Image (cartoon, rainbow, N blue to C red; front, side, top):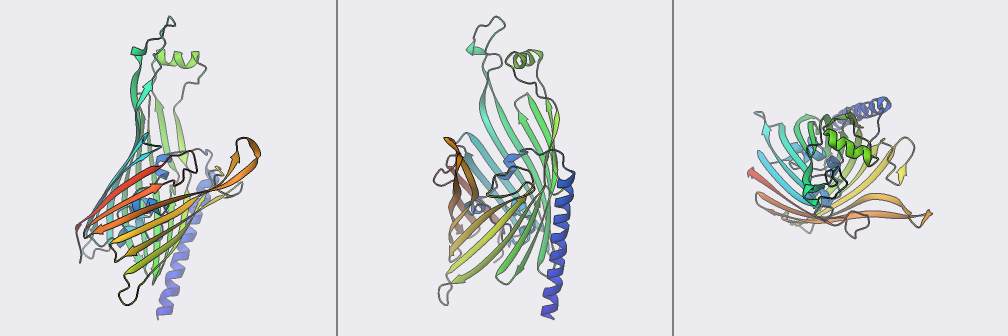
Length: 374
């Protein structure tokens, strides 16, 4: 009977994978625009997950699952959980903030709902469009400042399905603003699934599964348009951008050791990110598809103190001095975590070694179980 149950669950899981791939292929076959769209939504949330380089789609188990894989929301023990994160990217130039909360739903508590809010902004950007007057004189008093900020509201819902399989989905509302000059609204969906059997977990996440659109509109005065033309720049026109679907698959294994007490726990996960946006950023790519691998691990002591690490962003980088020469680069992340009853404190250091042009980033996040199930 147990064997039949396992086979039934595996067949259902295969059906979910088939639906994912079908959505993925249809949307990419019909897509006509391939752009870098809504990049702030590709950074990630939560110091715990970022320390593991985002390789968490199979085992994510906190409110941050609303971003990484909404199916993981069902692993939250507490009836209500809230989390916040602050990070300063590019050596403090960009401010990245995240706030999320959610609660168990239904009488049998076999579903979970959550809301996440993300903001990434760069403030005090000089506006030099009026620096030079009509007579050619330079007036620094005409320099003003503005902010460029991206916002995302993610509404998540997860529910138990069958045979240890959980499913979840996101509705994303996006708003982007560049001072008074431009603004954009976007809308999209994510879908995720997780399956756990003993120590093994499998995750599947479809991001922008139906293609997420972002519609831009611009607002320039006649004087500002003249500056664009006089300096040889094009005047931006209203347009619609599309974020093509991405599929993330993950497999994780967890266990414990340390004698009869088993004070030590460990968790390892490998993720593969499949895209067809034509960027060719990873070492594993073709004209049609790109696969970006990521690996993460966590070592815990008495479920109180955690050491985490991960690596990804495998690339072949062209030597600027000699285009025929390329070097292989990989980006590692590390982090630590501390669990104090209902409070989880996590820290991550991104881009250790400064292997790319992005500088070090320190990431802190707090997670609180407002009502704790013992």
